[in-house]
Image (cartoon, rainbow, N blue to C red):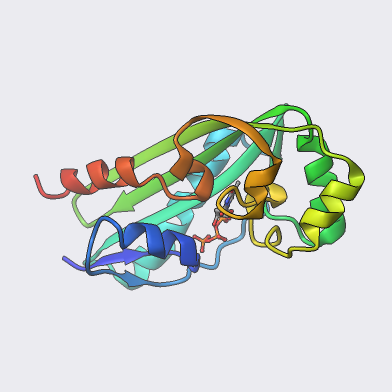
Length: 185
Ligand SMILES: Cc1cn([C@H]2C[C@H](O)[C@@H](COP(=O)(O)OP(=O)(O)OP(=O)(O)O)O2)c(=O)[nH]c1=O
C-alpha cells in the first residue's frame, strides 16, 4: 500500500525518509484558522486529521499521514507567524520562559486509523529586542510554529528542552515508526 505524506513541509519529508524508503508527498491545503475555538490538543489533532482526510478523499486506497505542530505559551496557541512583526511579538512572548510544543500525527487507510500527539517543553533564554531582531533577520522563522526553528539558528535561543526533540522539529519519527508498524498487523 502506497504511503502518502499529506504535507508540503520539506522537514517532514526528510524525517519520514529516515524510517521508510518509498512514499509520496501531497500538500494538504486546509483552513488552519479555527484557533481559539478548541483546546490546543484538540486543535493540533484536528489539523492533522483534516490534512489526512483531504488527501485520503482523493486517494482512498492508500495510507495517508497528516501532521501538525503548534507552540503553546500560557494558554495561547502560536502557529506560524504571518510576518516579521508577528514573529517579533511571538518571540517576545517566548523569551525567558517555558512553552510546550505539540505535534500531532494522524494516519489512516481504508481499515484503520492511528493518532497520536507527541509533546516537548522548551525553555528560552531571556532575549533582548536586538537578539530577536537579529534572529528574525535570518528569515528562518517564517514557516515555523512559534517563529523559530530549533534545528537552525533558533537553537541559540533555547536554554533547554524536555521531551521529544523531533516533536519540536515537526515530526516525531520514533512514534511515527511505531504507528506505521500497526498497519502491518
Ligand atoms: C517549533 C518549531 C516548528 N517547526 C516547524 C514544524 C512545522 O513544519 C511548522 C509548523 O507548521 P505546520 O502547519 O505544522 O506544518 P507546515 O505548514 O510546515 O507543513 P504541512 O502543514 O504541509 O505538513 O513549524 C520547526 O521546523 N522547528 C521548530 O523548532
